[in-house]
Amino acid sequence: MGRKVSGEATMEELRELEASLQKDPDLRYKLSVLSNWPQPAAGTEWETKTEQALEKHLARMEEEFPQEELPVKARRNFRKWVAVLSVLVVVLGSYCIYLLLNKYPQKAGKAAMAAIYTRDGSRSRAQLPDGTEVWLNGGSRLTYDPDMNNLDSREVTLEGEAFFDVAKNATKPFSIHTSRMNIKVLGTSFNVKAYTGDNTTEATLITGAVEVTLNDGMERNVKLAPNQKIILQHGPNDKLTQPNLVAGYKVENIHNNTQDSMVAETAWHDNYLVFDNDNFEDIALKMERWYGIKIHLNGNKLKTYHFTATFKNESFSEVLEALKVTTSFHCRIVSNEVFITQ
Image (cartoon, rainbow, N blue to C red; front, side, top):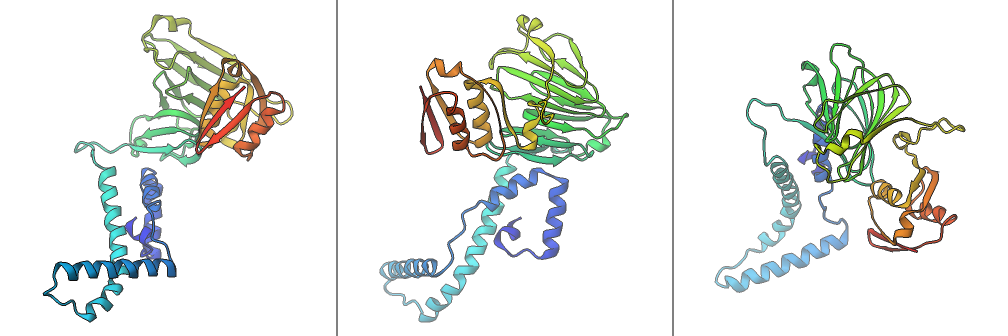
């Protein structure tokens, strides 16, 4: 990875790196960190700044050690070493970052868990070792054992929202673990929404069949049929063993858009931002994750407004302007934060 970032990697090394990234998706995050490492500017401006810095440094050395003359040849050769040292800095910096990312290694004999991350404002698609396709929404994390093909079962842990198209394997059930519910399937497509700070956890089944086990201290299993979803209601800080969660869930049918058969719960993985009679507070949370921003709603009345709309490839400003068509509010944007008032 260091050779790729510094531009020294050969085609053979690049192919080897790509093969490693396919086997271990967690490496993509590390490569992303290294790729975003600031690079020195190119052109005459950088050369001028380098020359000025070199002259200042040599002047300080002559003041500190006046009895020692710096050879003229050293001045000429020093510039040649600047480029070499720059590459060395990148490589050494890459190695240091790699050590930091692996600060807490797994215990000996235990395989390291792989993880896929998406930040707010981004979405990603990945294929697990068993062939299962996964789409991750913004602000999500999926962890799994990269050796799942050699285990008795296929298990992943989700924080956030993901759409799964599970590879069929009748002998190895596929399980998704979240903080509030576990989902067991053999081969199907479905959506799971399990953000830590949300008031609900949801699972939406598109095809096949799933069995949902609620993690509330009781053995309660719920089977879903296609085009059904389960909504577990809770507060963001509720304890999982609270007795009032016994009646805290519901199962309902999902509704397809009559014009294009779009399902609101899963449209995001096709890059559609959908509001289905959502209140402004929930919409603000969706847009935070969709665009990677922070929204402040000032006023309780604003939070009660409801919107129904579908967007694709629109910017945040365009979405706000569309919402203003039916509701009057004011918006102020400061850096990455948005302040909305009545």
